[in-house]
Length: 304
Figure 1: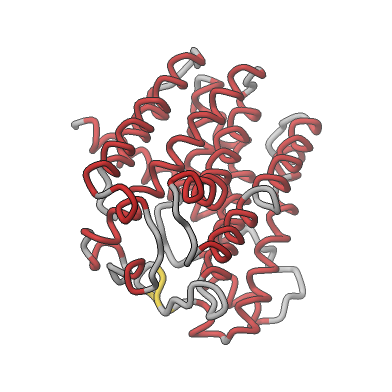
Figure 2: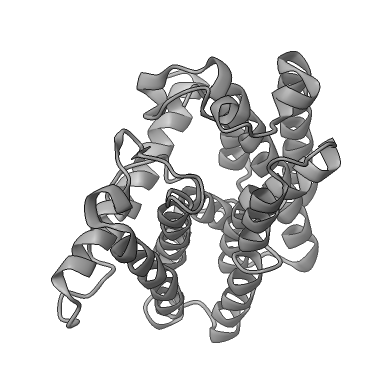
């Protein structure tokens, strides 16, 4: 099995664990309105790469040195997918990106209506903060570690993080003139949740402060590279593989890396950021760094 096939198999294993956890993450005993539960599950079970939760698991394994760290990390991995899913449900709304399809399926508001999509997103967001303490109750991590993870999530998914990046994107769509402005949007809208994923996994695995800093640098760089690659794929990708229309950024007059610096320079940026991310992992001297290194390489070559 070559390296790319091996990391795909590893990520598939992570996805199986995560999707099984997602199915049982909202207790059946809770008195939740049926339509709300259906709307939440519709988007949670819509597929996707599950990259962020996989990074929680992989970072925990890298630091701890064994995949047995997965059990403690799984509630947090599930929580980050709840956050990511809520952000997509809200991003797709007519007041935001106004998208009809996500991952090859009708977007949440197209199936359940705008009001229910907003409320389903709200419920997904708040449930994430219910899941993280389960890592302490069931997974055996220290309560202060769970507390630090909650604090990180509130910041990196909130106003100074992902939400702030989304706002900057909305406010700047017609007026972005520099790479610096566009980088700010990508770093917060995309990278911050990836930074959370790897540092949360690192905390669960027992990372020291220096290792957490290097994990954050890794997350920042692969997150930015991931978003630039998305910009590239929007122009030259395969709609069938992407599960959505290409050239949507052009049609919506969105400023992207290829728009500002061209396709070739954008590809060069992805490569540079990936190498810097891998250097951070090597500097951290983790017990088992290979999966994080392989994921960085895998993301560069993805086609969807």
